[in-house]
Length: 225
Image (tube, rainbow, N blue to C red; front, side, top):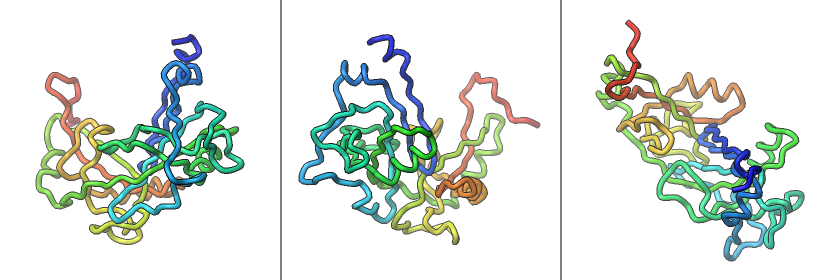
């Protein structure tokens, strides 16, 4: 790996279930192979041409340093972005094989990080609903090793079969959060209206969840008296 590649960094942001990743530099791509692929049967596709179904969340992947030339570029003025990427990293299993160019999220990301060169891709993933009334949820917060965990995802485009109260009815009442991005995924993470409202006040249309996890044995984390 070249010094330039070693200096490159990876940065993750979970905002509205949106995972934004600034990946390794161009030298890394040259050494390990590009993720750019052609989506079969589609000319200049856009991920938003398909709306996520009931109980599905949209996932995102953004890259600052994809190859600047592609046999299948995204539509103008984003020709420097490939129209798709292969095996994009995501929060939910099983992983997808292709992420399609997402014009609206690319515009959003570039506005937030000027001058903005990111190319963004998205896809839909089924979430796991849970019972928000599980008695173990409250009990988990009353131990000496309890600590708060939070998870936020994009509000569901089509909605959910188990909605929270309006104006949050595009958010499920409880979910099982993805194990990849939390310390400990509970059997049920209940909807947190206050945290969700805080995110939306910042312009992030999220659904947020909170629960108590347990610090591992031997850790220095103790619950304050």
